[in-house]
Length: 174
Ligand code: FES
Ligand code: FES
Image 1 (cartoon, rainbow, N blue to C red):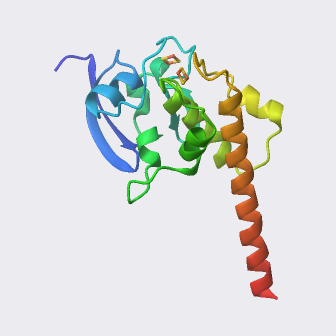
Image 2 (image 1 turned 90 degrees about the vertical axis):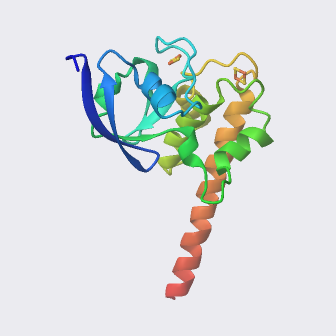
């Protein structure tokens, strides 16, 4: 095999993977073509629209401008990795449905991965912060407000649930 291929090891949605990659290929192509993770969408393919976003070692990236070889040793999460053990969808996916933040759905997986990055920080973001953090996504359908509401609602729900848990923990210790 020529020098244009390299063997890499990575974890994708919790599963260890070993794969030979073309050094010119994008992570989008690796995820879609080799692993059939088709939630990763090809929109602009130049890092402008956010449709291809995935989480790499906890940080959201445009996978279209991230070379597949750079994924060596990395932990990658795509929308498929949010599925619960019984096939259930996550709270943020449900919120997108409830808030009508999904119409054609093309931007949705990428937008949800940015939301996951925000939610995993486990802190209260201002409205402006949420809007800035979600600003890397182009959506032709929703007008963005519904996406914003879905992210904010899930953030508040998770923070409230954590507060309740901490309250229960404190009472148990008394
Ligand atoms: S397809 Fe990657 S940012 Fe648009
Ligand atoms: S829902 Fe259609 S592009 Fe966002």
